[in-house]
Image (cartoon, rainbow, N blue to C red):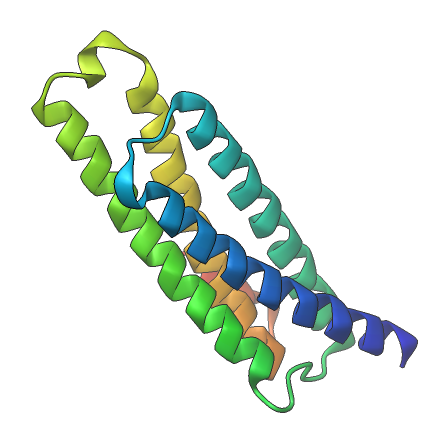
Length: 151
């Protein structure tokens, strides 16, 4: 029971934080081209968020009981997932805009943009899986793996 309460509290807090973080990231990219350092920090944060979400998925699967009875965590994870999708789109647009003016060929930032886009896409997918399992743990390992790997 203590483990369940801690997991619920951790996920509740994470869902609040990741929504705030995704809004902040979108705001930061609103008016200015990010620097390579800013993109690297964004990548590190999204990687850490994806790792936490992945560990939470495993913990929920081990408990094998719904965590989000009232749907509040799932709702916030959906918002974070939507914002992460917007972030991925905005990064892609910024990368294409830089390519259009030839800036990418003069620096290595294109690799950082590509990594940021891939990391945002990965976080989006993992948040979707977490959103599913907080309400209803996936019953089989095969079913869980199929969520990660689409054939």
